[in-house]
Length: 138
Image 1 (cartoon, rainbow, N blue to C red):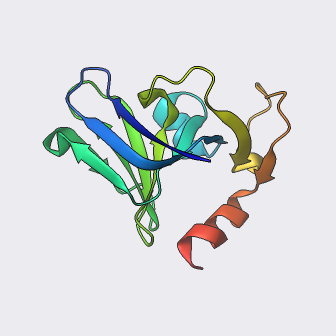
Image 2 (cartoon, rainbow, N blue to C red; image 1 turned 135 degrees about the vertical axis):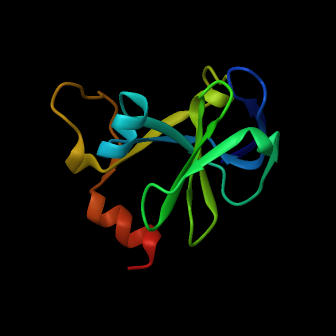
């Protein structure tokens, strides 16, 4: 299921409108996401159909050959990572203020997940190699 939603960073300098936001939330356990935010990155697939207001307040970081990360340059809120090849945006689930509208259904880079936390939900789990193959075209 997809939903239309608008979210913002903590200070409101960046607003993101997603026209076809998936309600299926995933967690990324890669070492970069954990270093970036101190834990897994909880993401919603915004596809390519997003509108960004306040883009002058966004800083981008090319974190790999196939993806880049974005954050608000004013307050530091993590906004999204984007797959360069497909322009697909994985948006931070926290931007939208959802309470019960989301379903936690997948985890990626499961082979990088440290042992000090785990989730009880039954999810689809993909390894890092499976993710890279799916989104990098390699």
